[in-house]
Length: 258
Image 1: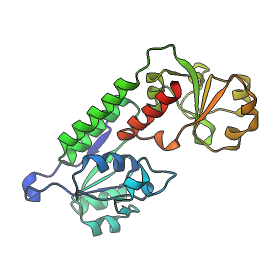
Image 2: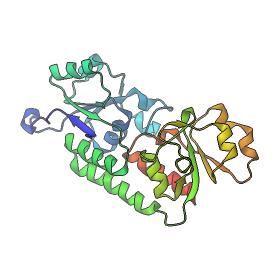
Image 3: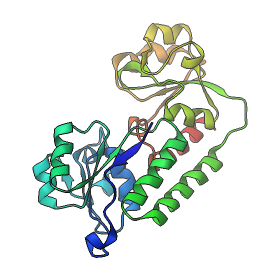
Image 4: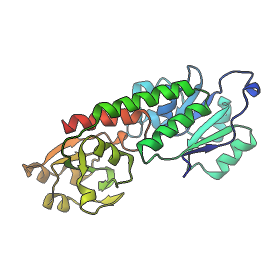
């Protein structure tokens, strides 16, 4: 399945040899482009990245960039060469950008480390910053090497917002396994986005519970009465995006594993 797609890149002479300007409408591409793009290239990022609840990058860094709500009018006013959006971009919005001659790149959700590395590579190439993309990939690979665990896996549950758990095909599940945290929920037959009740947690707890939500069950005092259960917070902002978020997620998971 294609993870990055869009119109054919414009030729350098169409931009008089300059680097393309970019508007990002996707919080995952925001985080990548904030590091990959050269100064002045990234004209605006999505409004999600200025929201503590939805940003996938550090707020102080995100607030160095202007934001857009994603309307065609806002984007056109910025006059970018490239718009980077999600794979769920409305067809009418995509058609409007096409009519205006603005190149569109759509970023899907990466479900593995390898898919995320390919996204970084493709996105960096699309904005003319292959070398910077390679540097980010090298940092991610370095973090993977530093956080690899060969010890016996520790049973763990990642309790996400909404009381659901990640499946075996989720990026965060791969990162947990890499750092030595075995998915207790997957071992019990729960799959991607399955709901995990408080009752089931109390009856069959893991060794480590990573809580990324704020639901009532996830803060229930009964959890504190399980002496064999170690409960830790996990930043929900690290759940959904790859790129540089992988580094921060690996560091946190390795810290918990130790």
